[in-house]
Length: 106
Image 1 (cartoon, rainbow, N blue to C red):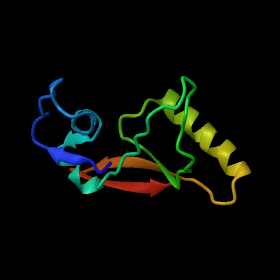
Image 2: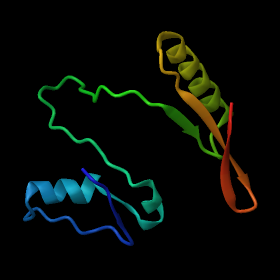
Image 3: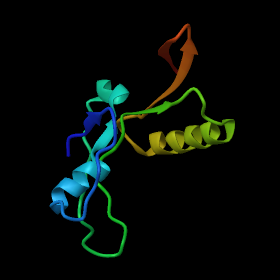
Image 4: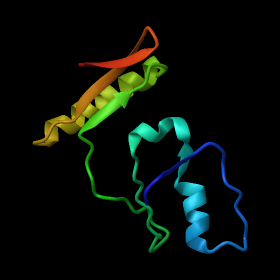
């Protein structure tokens, strides 16, 4: 589903069609994220087991406020994944400088 960027969260009602409820619950993001042009994959579970979309990331962006514990964990996971994949995952650590975000490749 294509994400809709809004200034305020829409009201959800039980009288709405299911697809509209799903869109208003899972397909909404604050307007200041609209540069992302995000698309989300939503699938009805066929069973109680976990299901997933078999896609692989090409990059992981670590935000400016990530804890050192989580940064270490993510770096470890990416390193392990990169040993088993032909296409490597780029690890990007975001930096904050003069109100502008930029990234440094590690």
